[in-house]
Amino acid sequence: MTQPEPLIIDRPTVAGETIEHDGAIIIKTPVADGITLKAKNGGIELHQGGGNNLTLQAAQRRTHTVISTGDIVGRKIIINGQVISGSTGSFNSHSHSNGVTVKGSLGSKASIKTDGSVKLDQAGDNLTVDAGGSITAANLGASALLDAGGSISLTLTGENSNLDAGGSIQADFVGASSKLDAGGSIQVAQVGASCVLDAGGSIRVGTVAENCRLDAGGSITIDTAPHPVKADAGGSVRIAGQKMKRDW
Figure 1 (cartoon, helix red, strand yellow):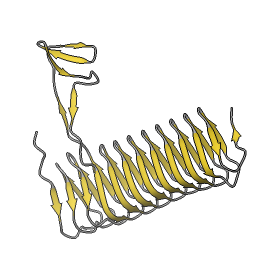
Figure 2 (cartoon, one colour; figure 1 turned 135 degrees about the vertical axis):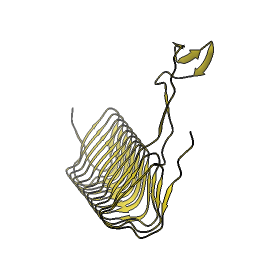
Figure 3 (cartoon, rainbow, N blue to C red; figure 1 turned 90 degrees about the vertical axis):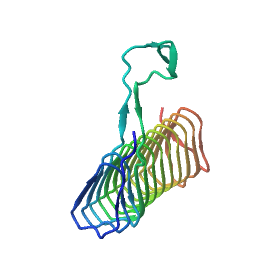
């Protein structure tokens, strides 16, 4: 199935307007406050960022393969004696959307939802992102709420943020009173006070502030910890320069 033509907008946008399109939406001008963008079968690209209270929704196209006759043997789907697939998870095949890409900065209270991945340069406080794929961002304000089916990679996020990833989480700086939950590993250069890090895999932190708690299915490694740290790991725990507090 062919991809629908993208909607390319190079005019000034109007505050509060809603733009919907069956295909990708590409906006080359700064996006005004309160705008809602809905791309039904494609991604969203903002070339010059946007204002406050934006809502961006990008849904992927779904195609369906219907099998009326055939057999599943082990991990193979067989039709008329011919192997057509090496997996048995589903008869549906999905083409992925381009997700959401924002160049430049977003204001506060932006909301992004997509089946694909999200790439951001900068966003203000109270950003909400729900992505089926990965989330990649540079500088985020306080109280960011990020939920990714894949990995999350950030330069920094402000205090009271909540990062939830099905894969790994990587960041240079995480603000105080934030919570990180990863199905894979967590790697952060600097963690603020009173943060909670929970990883199915390993955790590696450069510097951790006071009153933090780390839980890992694998190992925990902390390079610098001026204050006591609560650490619980399925593997080894290594905290440079202090005796760790370990929960059993």
